[in-house]
Structures are given as C-alpha cells and as structure tokens.
Image 1 (tube, rainbow, N blue to C red):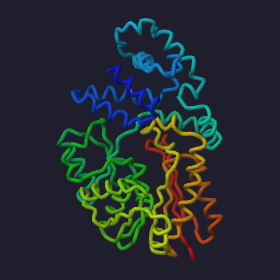
Image 2: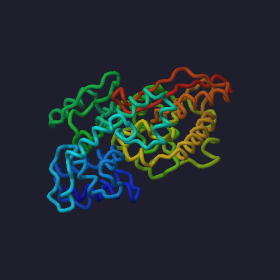
Image 3: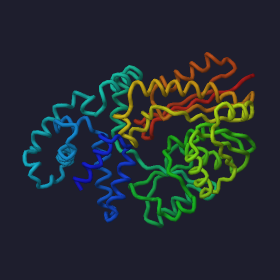
Image 4: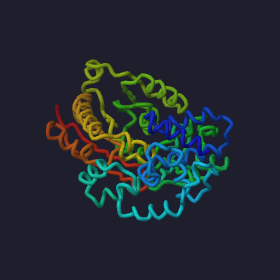
Length: 391
C-alpha cells in the first residue's frame, strides 16, 4: 500500500495530475483491492496532499514520496514497513520536530508562503488563520434529495434500510449528511435518481436565486449541471432552464444526469462567441452566474489546489469573472435578478467584484449577499442577489 500511495503522490506532484484523477488511475491499476485497501490509499493520498508542506519539511525532501509517506505513518501512529530504506526513520525526532513547528503556521498548516500572505491581507490575519485551519479538515459528504422523485425524509429512510446512516442538515431543506464515508453510487436510490452528491453550501446557492415555476432561468456557467438539476427540482419541472457552458462534454454529462433525475425542463446550449448572448439578450427572468474562481473555498475537497494555484492564475480568474458578469448580465429582463456565486472566500473575487460591477452598471442594485466560510462546516461560498432595475 505504501508503494501505491507514493506512486500516486508522484502523479500529483511531478506529473501535475489532479488528486482525484491520480487516485482513479491507481484504483484502475489495482482492481483486486477491496474497499479497505482503497480507503487506506485514498485517505493517505488526500491527507499527505493536504499537509504536503509539513510532511515534506519533516521528511527533509519534497520528491522522495516513499519517505514522505513513512513520515505520514509516523504522524498517524501507524506501522512503518520493515524496509531497509526506512531503517533510519526516527519517530521521536519526527514528532518532536512537528511539535516545534506549531507556531510556524504556514508550514504547520501547509500553505505556500505567498498564498498565506495574500489571504491574510485579503481576510485579515486572524480570520484567515481560522479558515486555513478549518480547510485542513476532511470535508463531510452531503447529498441533495431530488424532490422531483422523493423527499429528504423518504430518502433518509430508504438509505437507512440499506445500512447507510444520515443526518439532517440544519438550514438546508433537502440536504443529508453521511454519518460514515462510503461509496453510495451503487446504491439503488442513486441509480433511480433520488439524490445527487452536492455540498450543502452549494445547495443554498440555487435556493438563493428563488426560481419560480413559470420563469426562464439561465444557468450561464452550468458545467455538468449540479445547480441546473437543483433549479429544475425547485421549479417542479416547470418553466424553462437554459444551461450554458463552453465545454460540450460537460453538457452531455448534464443531459445524462437530467435523464436519471427526471428533470425535463432543461435545455443545454454550447456557448458560441458573439451569438449566445445576442440570442438571449433581455430574455431571462433569473440568471445564475456560478463563475470560475480560485476554488479556495473547496480546498477541503481539492487539497491539491493549494499547490496548483498561483497569484497569476487568481488574477486571470478575476478578469474572467468581471467579463462574465458584465456580458451575461445583458441576458436579464428589466426587473430580473441574477445570482453571482463563487466557491471562493476571497473578497477580491466576491464582494469587491460585485462592487466594481455595480459601480459600472448603475441600472443594477444589490438586494443581498451572503458568505459561507469553511469554519462553519460547509465548503466556502459567496452569493450575491442583484436586481436589474432598468434598461
């Protein structure tokens, strides 16, 4: 298992694969593994990726992934393989060194210096430290009951019969939290479209837009359609949702998911430069702009983002966000509303972006906005409800 963990880390940090894709490759190469082996490797890979700066510092190497894995075993009080290469590993020295780093938070909590400093300046030192620590905890698994086919209570009861325990989520009407992490995609309820995997905070975004059953709603950055599917359920399969994306393969996945979910009021369109916005100008009652972002709010789920982000990539993303809200806001009718949302906790991608838009577009007004922080238990999200007051 240690060898597989090290090789998977090599895929992430040397070949620059995303963690989930690297694990997927490892599992395909080891189809004989049972659930226990798969769980061990997945947990090790994600935990080491999450704390890579700390573990590589303790191992005094950032490219010997076998030794870094051995350090992880020491920290977890697990057995180190009886390999000649590990004979010099001294658990007492490693643990003492770790203890001495507790006051050096960028290393102890494993963030690049530039990211730590940038986020401290954006959020304030104290708030950032709170969120940085919170984002190093494993994310809970949340489900969204598909109310086109069932209710949250019926879903919970069905899963319980299959030995899957869940909890209701306060403040999120259709959400359930898994008590224990497990593979739920083979469950009958999933195959019949009774639920989707979706963070509870993400579910609040679709609720925030308050779609009505007789309206035209545009989801302009739909991706594979998690929020489009939720909107369809909230609209009770009435009205119309136009789901847009630049990637056709994502919209094909949305169509497949919509079929399983029984969502029939969704139309997908691949975005065409210069045509799509022109065709939809002044058409939408409601507009969802779940824009590309740094993803800092979902580091619990995507810890490798810490090491892939750069200041330059964040700056480019901010420019893209500005372009999207400026251009796609033209699709709203007078009196229509849009929700701008990100999975980021940075004000520069959130409220500052909205303030800039409102300053340049006096025919729009902010109704309300909301931030969800990782320390509150969900992923980190921002959402702003904005009304178009006139042409």
